[in-house]
Length: 596
Image 1 (cartoon, rainbow, N blue to C red):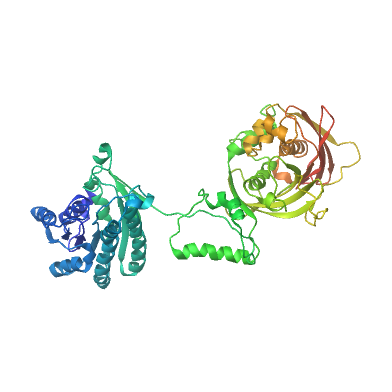
Image 2 (spheres, rainbow, N blue to C red; image 1 turned 180 degrees about the vertical axis):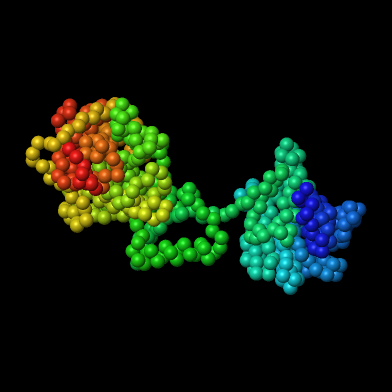
């Protein structure tokens, strides 16, 4: 077998706590593969009491009986220099150090004595440090060394009644990190093993069915490979149990920016609370290799703050064919119209997104951040008192049919309208390569948030609506919505209960749940695409609308359209009542060849 080629001839291995359990298996395996082994064991109980030479002697004799070479060492690992001295006196070098010695003194936190704490830390943490410190100069001089620290799942995750043990075991992870850094240039590699094995320390603690399968000999080969000259692993944490092994890593989330400029010196606990979901979001977590990498991201952040490039909010928006199809169904696309198939079937040769789908990244950002409420003096904005006033969407590059968009947004303008406030937000969405794909601008009317002494008119940059031509429409299209339209559309992401919950709608002042304004926008965009582009999404550039009145699911929408060059003005109304629901609206097209 291939494993027989991995030998340790000429190498000297020191294994601490090698009188039983994992340590014994390590020592036997190294000895059977040609290494000269120092079998260290104080010979005490797993509580750290007493001492005996018998445990180490038995293992030494086992190795010799198999034709190997070994010597016993009976020193405490706290006297690490003496342990390593045994290797130097007997074999003249030390190539491998497996820090395995350990004891348990399990107590709840309030019952852990100073002695319980100190004994456990001395053996596990200090002992590993002292042995490593003593071996390091010899390894450095010979430009070779392999060091193992033994941690535990208790250190990684914590465990009731093991505060002392858990702290020591996590301390070994930090120790290994530094040893790996300091030793790398001299071919001294240090890794952490996180074993779960049946031993005198775990007997009676683990369930029998698990205890019986946690055989130390199933972990020993993992440690042996980490200690071989062919293994280039350094600074890794390897968990192993019952014939299983995997790498464990620490990761850091994307996080949240808690200030918007380099000049902002104060943040409040309330603002931290508003950002907390972002702070603890691990959906985009990454493993960082070093302090330098972690610091680098902070330096980059500070540079952006200095340059004024930090937005008030940021979000990621992942989508694929299923999302595009669900959206298309939500705004009335149907297989009854063959021209709609390109929006409903992912294998269609012309499969594409209906452009208005891309209002969603900006909407999701607003819904998952506190952009609107933090822009108001009162801070009072929630789903019961906000209305979508106006929406602008601009497609800036070829739109994909799947991917992840990163959206940054900020408050652009705030107006005091007396009975309420208007908050204008700008959002820009970029793909994975940094291409700007879409821009969104939303004007949100917050009922009851006015009369704070603010200005009434918008600043430059708030995209205006357009006057509808006074002549008769060039074209009109009607679409019947269904009573389930809002229930279907909300699955694309706008989960405001106003659109499905009768009780919530009543609180907001409506007799029944209403259709999303953006759903009406989607129907209107479909009408323009169908009439003037033969459903060619690539010809769409931008849309601007003002939402004038609510629509009830089941009502019929009529879209009147006027074409003037590259711009198609439109107005959307309810057939049953004649009430206008979208006014001052237009779609800008990229191609003047769009026909009537």
